[in-house]
Length: 228
Image 1 (spheres, rainbow, N blue to C red):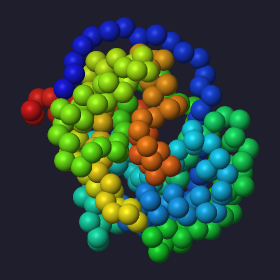
Image 2 (image 1 turned 90 degrees about the vertical axis):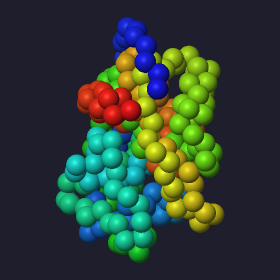
Image 3 (image 1 turned 30 degrees about the vertical axis):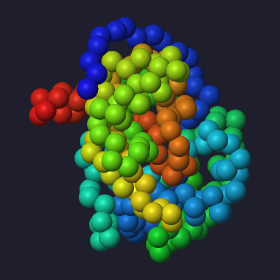
Image 4 (image 1 turned 45 degrees about the vertical axis):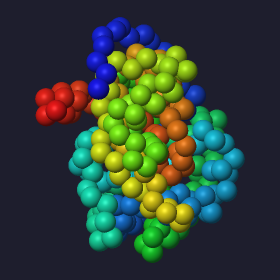
């Protein structure tokens, strides 16, 4: 765990934003990121034309900002409501392409999913961010993972002040399981927060990995620190 104090600075509007689509889908496996990405990219090949485009996993109410996720097993399902959104992070100048997804029907892990209208959302300036999945080496311990993250971000001019990672997780892929860890970073400067949301970290961002979302407060960090 890293824990240092610092100030924050301010940055203007980002060149990236989140596009939130209405969807119609009854349920999806918790471990659906790979199937979702493949289905979307087959239906809309332009998603592969820009490396900055990232596809979020689909989450339901109650799991948007939570540290914990349901266990990923063969039977675990997410029950989707009409309020559930498909979110794609993309450059502002590519948003007009998103209109082409309206009305598309795809199949994700055997479940039909229809895409509807969309709205846009600016990236957050909050200083606490959370990534549900960051790819890591199989068997890498927490200290090694955090050390690698610290060195990676240092090369981008971002200094870690407060960070906590979650347990090892496995994401299903056609080539076998992919090891990931969740990561929370706190007390980021505003410029750092926006840059992390713009660029993410690591590979497989079109499969829901390395994507940072805002966390409303630091209570989860404090709780985890107290439990150690």
